[in-house]
Image 1 (cartoon, rainbow, N blue to C red):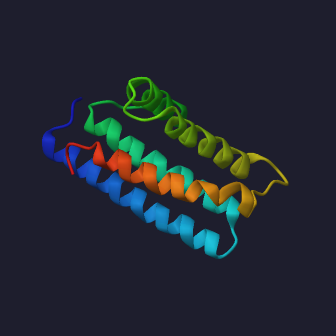
Image 2 (cartoon, rainbow, N blue to C red):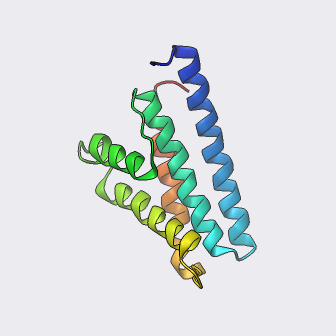
Image 3 (tube, one colour):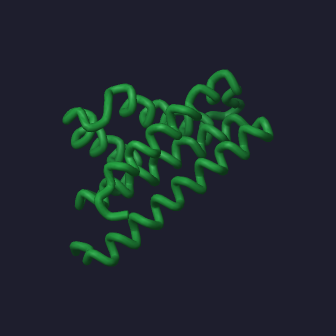
Length: 133
């Protein structure tokens, strides 16, 4: 069932706010040296803002892989987002999965820290693509 304009606007607003709050959580985790959790929060920052973009454009995905696939198909392949930006989302999703599900595994500062700037920039770029704010 298609969303009406107000429902769509509410969902997008919620996901944008959640993305920004999750970015703050990532910074907090890094400050405490929790790099695996920071990688998780960086991924979710991009997951939430990507979901907002999909809703804004009338698209939906049921899975994490589905969100990434739709972002790649509709925004990376069309040149709206760069290949590096698409790769950032995929890399962080893989880091999140490894950190969450691989036993005896931890990400280090060297692994995660470079993704902070990339995530912040991509968050703002995707947010700028939204028609409904």
